[in-house]
Every structure is written in structure tokens, then in C-alpha cells.
Image (cartoon, rainbow, N blue to C red):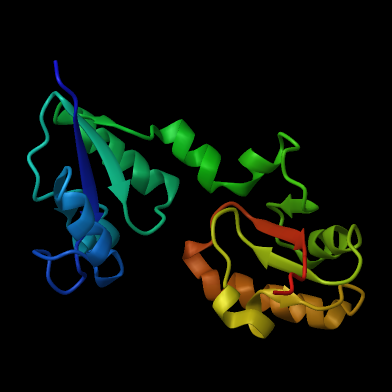
Length: 193
């Protein structure tokens, strides 16, 4: 049996017949060498339903290319692929391992000091902040808000508890229901080019 690698990309949120603009070049490149298909982005994120333009068969190995998904949503994709006879290139446990920061930090291969908590009370957060000195960054188990640098990502000095809590509260509030796992604090490493 010859394996067929299929790349599934998210569709444009406004037109399910074309790839998301952020993945358009990658889609075109992949289509030169592999089978490709689209996952309806609107149905996936709004209805938690997986629909694809590609008909999956028994010899298909599916590679997902798109925005990071919550593990529950990735699990739906895995289930859909398997029910249609295919197999994911990256299974759910591999996906969770690489996408949820506590999984890949706990094996000590990470060289940046990283701590986390699922308790989002100020008391727990302050206790966590006390384990650091100087500048830190914050995120949940998957995503940050680095595009909101001073407001919801970067804390220049953890000893300024008032500002640290302001940034952390902004982050938690802005993530809302999209917050995954808990709060992660990491030493900030200033790289100069």
C-alpha cells in the first residue's frame, strides 16, 4: 500500500473555497507535490464541526497546517480523519506535547526558567512572581499576547507587583474563554541583533 500524504489547510473565513490568506503560499507550494484540501474554518471555530474539501481514504496520512487549535478541537480533527479511514501525521498526544508548554518544559530540555499555575488567584500569581527576578513574559499553556507587549505580555520588573498584576489581569481578561490551561511565566531573555 502506497501512503498518500495530504496537507489540510484552513479555508479563508469568508470563502471556504480558498485557503486562509496566511497559508495561501504554503498551500500553493504543497499542492505541487502533495494532495491538498481545505478545512472549513468558520464551521470548525464557530460550530466545532470538521468538514473538508478533500475526501479522505484509507491510505491517507493527514498533515494539518493552520492556526493552533485547542486540544479538544484537534481531537475532533483526529476523530474525523480516523472515521474516514485516514491517519494523522501528528497524533493527539504528540500535538498536546508540543503545544502545551508544561509538557515540553517538564523534561528539563528547556533553558529558560519557566513556571506555571492553574490557580489564577492573585495570591497564587504573586507567589509565582516571587520565584523570578527582573523581566518576564506571560502566556497561557499555548498562546501569548506578544502583539500587546506592554499591556498583556511583558513585565519589565516582577518586583513591581502592581504593574505585574495589571499586565497579568489584562492577559487573563483578554484571553477570556480562549485561555488554555493556566498562566505561564518565563524569564525574559533580551536578544540583541
